[in-house]
Image (cartoon, rainbow, N blue to C red; front, side, top):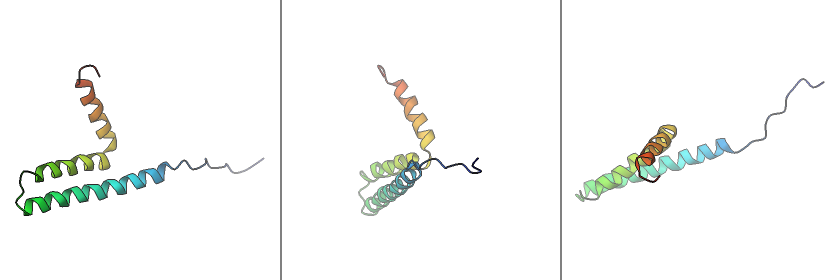
Length: 81
C-alpha cells in the first residue's frame, strides 16, 4: 500500500496564463505609450484610438472572466447570433 499520491501530469495551463499575461501587459504598455506619443506630437485625432486599444487589451488582461461575460452579453444583443 502506497502512502503518497502521484501528481497529475502538467497541462501547461500555468505557463499559458503567464505568457498571455506578459504579452497582454507588453501590448497594453505599447498601446498606451503610443497614445501618449501621439498626444505629445499633437496628433489628437489618432491618440484616442490607441488609448481605447490599450484599455480594451488591459481589460482582457486583468479581468478575463468579466471580459468574457461582457463579450457574451454584447453577442446576445446582435440579431441572429
